[in-house]
Image (cartoon, rainbow, N blue to C red):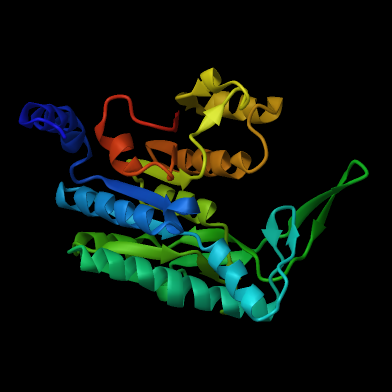
Length: 294
């Protein structure tokens, strides 16, 4: 147990950061194990609630891939992936939309509301929040890149920032499902990292936080002492080119770079498996994870 003095010291350490982020918009990409473990779910909701009550304007963008896969398995439909993207026919898109909006989004909104917040759930189809277009998968074959149509998988064309700004001004926490709307009204399933990045850029957010299942970025993952706590845009691009950043970390870093390019001040990739990871990143001197800055 902390002594009263220890508790006071912790609060005093947090004060400069509370002042720094007061009134600022922070976009949280909520995904990974933090969405699966009930204990971590509770911790994330507590973190977001504290952020709201000290004057921060949080926006939550969530994933839901494991929930979609689980539902597809229940109905006997096999999930197929091409270059890490889910092949999404019309039936799969309808299921994805139902799971992301009807189950995952509503659960997050309910938990936030039960914690004393005013939260509103929405998808990219509400108010044309996320205008989307079809995204083709890139397949490398015999030294050539082929672009393959994998159905209703999309990429963000534009964000209607006023929809979110109005909610933030009204004191609400927007909770966004990564479903976009196409030119003809069709739905698209979009990678939540990229949606969060586009939302952060459109709102000129102070910070984008990506919750993941790893500590951050290493120069060499086998060497735990090679952890990288901070990167510039230039360094991040060089590490991708050199293969230091690879695999599933590439889209996360690209999302951060995209957010910075569109007006977000700072971005961080943090370990969502760590209880109260959001508070540790925002309100402590050392922070956690890897920060990518201009």
